[in-house]
Image 1: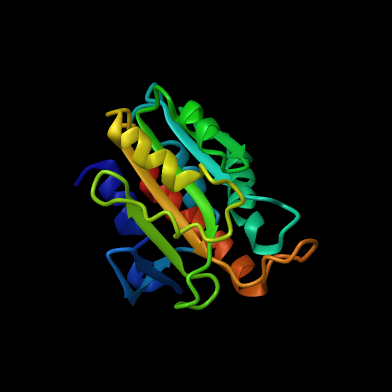
Image 2 (image 1 turned 45 degrees about the vertical axis):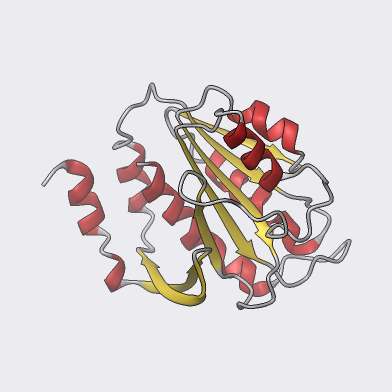
Length: 202
């Protein structure tokens, strides 16, 4: 068992708290993804990044003045505070051309944005692999950009310019009113979601 396997075994998800999770391939099926709650996890993962020279880009998308639409930005800020080696964290509004520029040259990209399907509880996390599936344009329902994240991914696919790895996370929101605060259910998801990202990038 290598070091990363030992760390993941140490934080066995079956022993810890639940958060709702769904995949775009099967949106009507949710499973419990569980994570450790001890701060020690951050030290372990920071020291176990496989290749500090690899270019990993984390992109938080959203509008901090529109309630749950801010969740992608808040995730990005929490990850910025960790000073992860080999990782660049960006905060963007979701305009497609800016996204394509931000991930240019990256080895792996992880993008976080709020979504609203109305089919799952607020705080549900959707995980999509851009190389395995198309990203429906209506998935980011509350995007104010005609050329947004979904369109940027599909254009990059057409141009054969997708990053070698591109994972998109959508966090189900509830309230997108201007001036609203983050919904309690969405805010509660943040700590465990950040831990999930730590596992993904290692």
